[in-house]
Image (cartoon, rainbow, N blue to C red; front, side):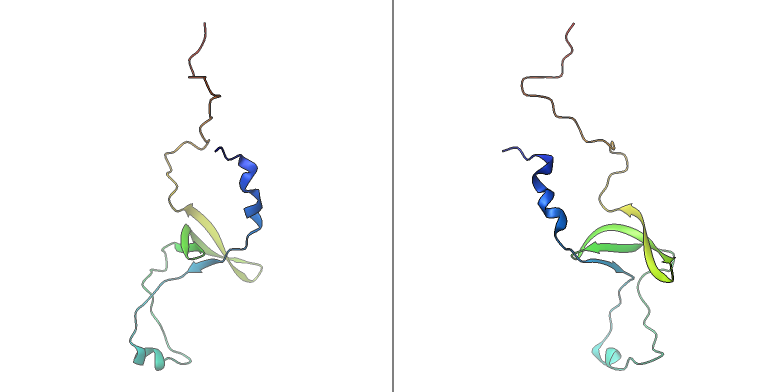
Length: 104
């Protein structure tokens, strides 16, 4: 079965949740219960590290915080799992029976 490039177009309108993770920490319940105004929670990420971009909980990219019209924004810096040495164009499929040999 061959999938045509347009075969999955209907999925483009599916809603997904995109979130950005600043960092994590582990705390005892008594520490969480003691949190209040002016409390400081230190996260496991340094201020100059890229942030994780997640779609439905799965990492897809890394980015950095920016300001845009008075709101937080995120500039995507790298895509997760994308090999930088891979060619940018997808391989071209040859028609059946064509082995790619040149004819003289």
